[in-house]
Length: 304
Image 1 (tube, rainbow, N blue to C red):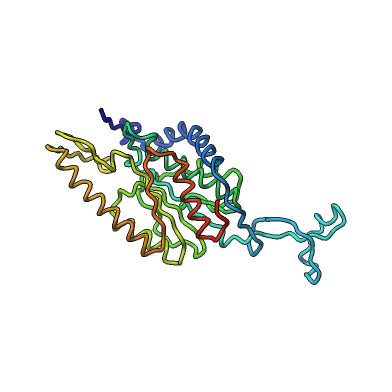
Image 2: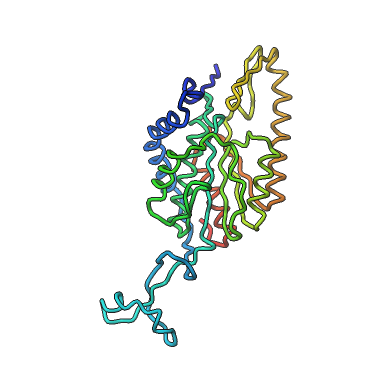
């Protein structure tokens, strides 16, 4: 028999929802981070893309080249072994990858056919992508929460920011343009109105930024395999709907879902973004490898 469950149903509308959800997330994060690191280790990293240029972050020392200005010499480093070295800073403009992980109430859903709730799969995929990208020399940040960093502790930085986030129930990413040379990776179930999501994608891409939309779906959401009488619950608004003939209603549901997905796909096509559908009855590594490969291809990096 198929069953459905929602993470912490009694805590969906608590007196202090932000605090309750943060505590719940904090309890799950160690397990999710370990899983994300296993996923990241299972795929080959992106070839390094770092290069020098204007920026604030130290990249590397290199020997002074004949004809360069003496003002570029790092005298402290040069004094260590008697050779002249230049301190190079990293060119930051093309090294920004911006994640956005949907943690709205609908993401808490998981059926008995799923390996994990959608939100847990989204977090694992986001953390694994962040670690993979940083290992490949990229900078990663979370939209609205952190700046883009190349830190080896990027997963911990993201986790701490998510726990402290007071806007965790937002089902759409921030509506601001991205830097022209940046990449966005939006991880969501895409159950917000297609027109609203399309508007956010268009705004983010208006500067020419590239993007990748990863839709997380539970297998029951895809197939709606129910018959007889059923009662459906809207986790976002707290509404319910009684269905007299779930089998007949399911066909209309699947048609509406297909139309909804087509609208999202069209918005991605117009923006020049990619769209990937991932079901939670499949391994997380499939989604991570797919998105990481798409990012690498968009930047002209070597394939995995």
